[in-house]
Length: 284
Picture 1 (spheres, rainbow, N blue to C red):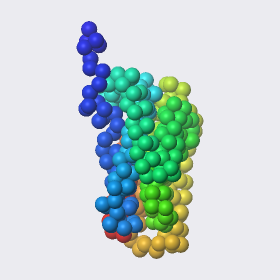
Picture 2: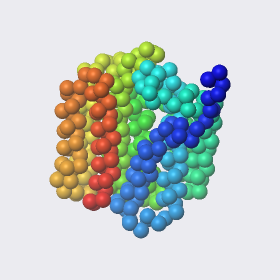
Picture 3: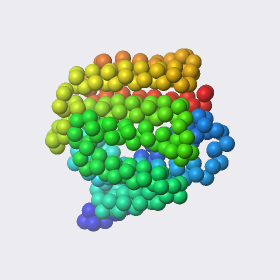
Picture 4: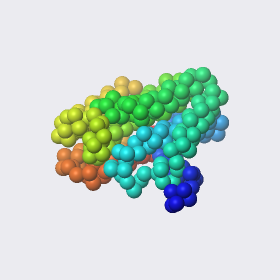
């Protein structure tokens, strides 16, 4: 009887399902990229608003379909955060995923075929990731990281330019997201293993996975410094404050991490590093 009286949909559940604050960060990243790395006058450009809204809508659809496929795993890894089946039915979740994907691609058409095509590929890749790729070692992590970096690089696509700083920040978004996705797999090891996922921590173990992260961070830092020296010449203290000190704390905590709580902290710290990166655009 209680099941019959349960509402099939609530706005609060939809907001939780689409990770509203993550969507705000995506929009903020695109606005900061355009206004602080290219031209402050772009803040009033309607095309930038459409880009931010359409990108956020595509991302929201991705969050929904990810939770749709991961209900059983999430009931083990994070039962308190499961929304589908509690605040919104599976049928409604699938409907909103489809509606949001179509809406995001349609809005992209207002900005041109290139943006619409990227939105279409992004929506498809998010579905593929949720359906299959995320259960494979590393490739699913790379897919999400590529999409995150692409959300920043889309500003170059919108304005038909190739700004070096935009590319550097897209690279930053790619690597930080890649590291965070691997850390999340370490955090969700129990549930993923129960349902036969083949993520990096399951295939290689936690110790070897940590070494993958160390190598990724070394590669990331080297690429950023090279690109800065070759194209932009930002002062070194800028990277020390906004990048290397936060990453140093991350590595220090990662070395000691061995519990789900530790990996959750590291995952959240990656989000803070991402936010610091966005805010650092103000000082350029």
